[in-house]
Amino acid sequence: MPHVLSVNIGARADFEPAVIGHTGHDKRPVSGAVRISAPAGPGSGLAGDHISDGRSHGGPDQAVYAYSREDLDTWSAELGRDLAPGIFGENLTTVGVDPTNAVVGERWRIGGTLLQVTDPRIPCRTFVGVMDVQGWMKLFTERALCGTYFRVLEPGSVTAGDEIVLVDRPDHDVTVQLVFRALTLEPELLPRLLAVAPHLTEKTRAKVRRRLGAAV
Image (cartoon, rainbow, N blue to C red):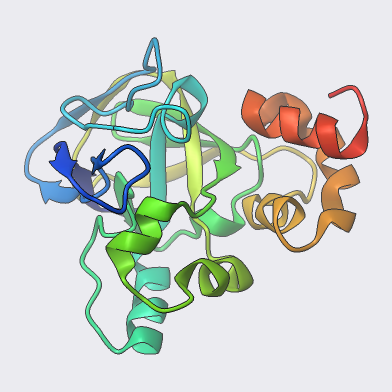
């Protein structure tokens, strides 16, 4: 059964490699229910979760970030070290479902919430500093195991162990990973994002507009 392995939140911590000198990237599993709602501003959708760089992370269209335990295990094997849930900055560590290959716009029911898939996670300087792996930015980009952001359609509470139910999947084949590839190493894929533009974040739509010179 697809389910949430852990719900992870982070506190503000000083961190020199971060763009603004502090971060909430180091997220840790918590016990009990966590309230998830659409943030009014640039913050996280999870109660108690800190986001330092609101220009790059968080906000209504990036309220929740999910990454699979299976992909963490892939990285663990490649890097030769254990990777704990939350180390990628994900709020939800999942089992039995593939956030990276979710279709843009599909909706997931998790606990009392309804979430909608929006954008991939693009690696940043803070993530590179946390991982402390030579060439991490390039490696993560090449592998394109990016995880996905969600917007919150219905607020509610989520607990570790909650089932993940696919409620609706749009009739197209644009996955979160395809969006990631289009925005990074394969710009020839950018025109395919036009069809799913309403489901993407405004930041991504703006990038597509600039790069294609098209109305999105």
